[in-house]
Length: 204
Image 1 (cartoon, rainbow, N blue to C red):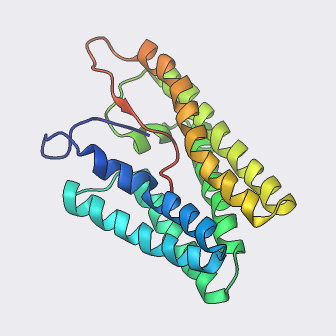
Image 2 (image 1 turned 60 degrees about the vertical axis):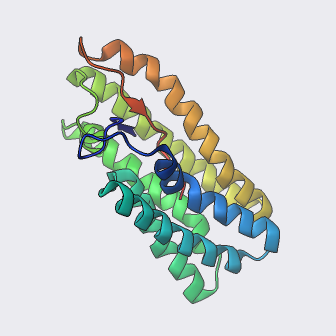
């Protein structure tokens, strides 16, 4: 996602807050799992850390960006279901559901002649309609590939490998967005300041 470095009141956003909101829950979940080797205990940590991250982000910045809010809300829902039914399937399949939903949203928007990625990114980036369409298809493709990879790993590998895969998606998202920055800058309107680019993975 792309955000301006300014908060709603024009103040510079706190970098540590964004890091906590984006990555805190996933990292806490991974650490809890490898320390305890207990998926249920790690799920408790995921749910608690997701709620805390959203609360901290809102308390400090007085707003939550759309994508982190979506990821955080889904983490709470699927994590709670996992705790209720004592199953790791819900947390694992969450990655598939979220990424498929985002891919469908983006591809569906392109088919309908709209710019769904612009809605997610806000007004921080000013691109032509053709550039938005290309960027939307790239992001949609990324989400679809992640969903497919998650299903492959989830169904063929053990829990240890899946948790490592989930944590590995964080740097993968950083690599993806880094490959898109040159395209964004090339097609930005003249006079625009480069926006701070964030990966398409809030970390939950």
